[in-house]
Image 1: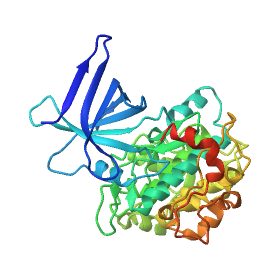
Image 2: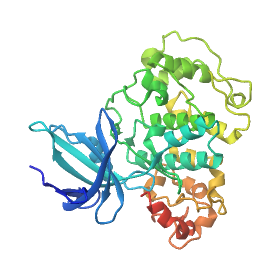
Image 3: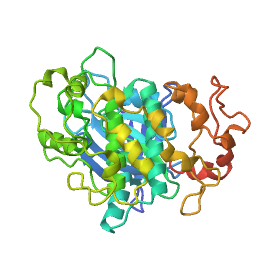
Length: 405
């Protein structure tokens, strides 16, 4: 049914050749050969393999999922739309047969990126160290860029967590991955509330809301930021209800109005009355938030940003673009900033019109003057041209960034 050819060589190597469709551009199937296949992950969705493309020697990841023939695969439809430096790229896709009759698998051929924020943060945590603040800024900024981009299409990721943030530790390039839960949200159309991993679930999801917006991703990103600052999850609930208790311990009991904004069906619900911790106090010992404490030297701007992301009222949360423009990230806009390993920083200012569409006026902050003066750069007054605003850095970083694109 599907063209798949496997060749075995004397040295024991195996080359698989499939007919695959490019992830972007016209549907022109082509032969793709890969070798050195090994399993690197599995879950309820299926299996992820690592392999090497024969023609270029580049490493790829192949995500293999069982395809329900009655429906189009939502993850595939979404990934084919996306093209951004902070989102894992769909190179090709192809179908393969399963062991059982009529079983069909969809195979997504993706960029291989070696690490995740989860594993890097765990490494520091186990060593009783904190992630250097410049990396916290670098990773969170790129996450917000990826969210600004997908939200501009009305796409909500719905599973933002450290495990889904891929990292190239050498270049500090972050790429958002796993669009298996992602959906284009349409106002007025209900959505399931039982999505998103527990520690990162927005309170409206815990309340069972079905009319939520992309701001659930912003809450999750706020949880990731707090976790990188704390060295452990900020809301480590062991059930849905307990999750809410952990949130209330930090934010205090939601007001009647805040509850109405999350889910009007719960306005009469009796919540434990707990006073909110002022966020500024959260940073100073011995003020404990649940069992966590923001370290005494946590930058006030980091705490200020956290407080604007972890808001009960969904509409009160920052948009991803507003988060990128926050003063916490001002250091990244310094033309002289380099990575701790001496490398140039990754592309940070090459905003497209699409990315800036939610608030073009922020371009004057997001694209610093030193990046604006480059030929062909996006400028705040030139809002119709695509941006190449980081071309001042590009001469040094293109190859490094491309290593994980």
